[in-house]
Figure 1 (cartoon, rainbow, N blue to C red):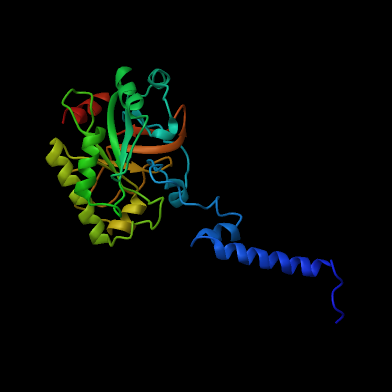
Figure 2 (figure 1 turned 60 degrees about the vertical axis):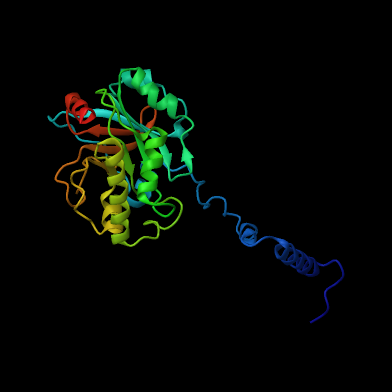
Length: 279
């Protein structure tokens, strides 16, 4: 084979390859992968604090139609987090929304910078409001996170318009779906959170989850039926519920509803929402 001519493409490619190897050798551990993969940013793990209710529902469970009409009363609600910014509460109220939950905290490292506008804003237009905590069982204990939640907006007051706090326990957007825990360890973590929340507020926290996650990560544990269930399923019906619950209290049925995206139905008329607020 004849030797390549000076300036031919082959030596240039070799020189470029050598230069790339030299650059990667100087990068800190893990940085080379970003150079190697042009799609790294598209598949990057989201930043801590950005999780919100239902973040993994479509990816894991898909989505179907909207709820079918029934004779039974259902009261419309929404759930919001910082990514929705300042919420148009008057618009939502005029559209028939009567209750709302706002993300207050995540782990023990994040509080919602829009919490005041969202939590107090819903209250100021006459809605019944509550707060939720996005659980990260791989970072600290359940009791520690319950304390953090209560200390950062997740408490309860007997004013007839404040709902008990919600534990948002669902697919982990930052890593392993079950946060690296066995099913029994996950049940223990949830119990730890619920017990501390009740000790601090006197109320049983609501549990927000999906049946698929609950089955996979708790072994479909049936021992938390005293806690109201908020089921996540983007379809025409709530579907099969996790073990232990014969009915749901709330149902997140879409992430693409009007104004804020996440819309929910309370399983009962407005007087039942008030009853949950009153305890």
